Image (tube, rainbow, N blue to C red; front, side, top):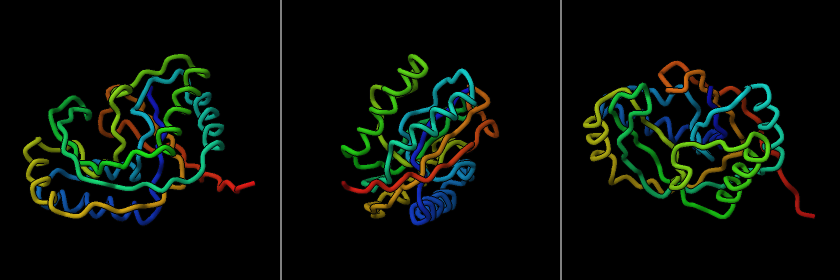
Amino acid sequence: MKATIVLIADNDAENFGRKLMLEAHLYGHMGFEMARLPQHVSLKQPFSIPDLEAFESFFDSFASRLSPFEIEFVEMDLFRSDVLGGVPSGCLSLRVKTTAHLTEAQRMLNEDLLFAFGPCPADHDDDYIFHMTFAIGGAKFSSYEKAYQALKECDFRRSFRFSKLGLFYYNDDNITPGSYFCYKVIDLPEKTAI
């Protein structure tokens, strides 16, 4: 089993991501695989966990240490992806501006995971790019290229508030369709200056 921790989009960013998902589908006919999850920005890619109950306790504690984020999208990216069942496909995502707040949350997560569970390696630990995926899997890479060409001139520069933390659970280590979902969401506490 695997899990990951993500920042969950508030309504405006959720609606923006869903609109992009539909537009991409209209151009590339790749379906709505990303609709299985809320729009989000991951702090780490999925990694193996020993026990869901223990990880849920960790998640609750970690959430109490964060506060809401302002996240700025800067551009659209196109990547090759075989994440869903090992089938060669694609991924369209919005790149997120890297900020001190975001990198500090990621650093805290990795340190806390190491302390609580030992090493928790995940894909792209060394070269992670913060992003919000709006289309993945479900079609050949050429479909994603077609949607990318149609959408690339759009202005994606927008900022949105992310005030919830999500725990995604993957029952299948290969992350096949239907084997994962958003298990839990917590509102991040507003911090007040002292």
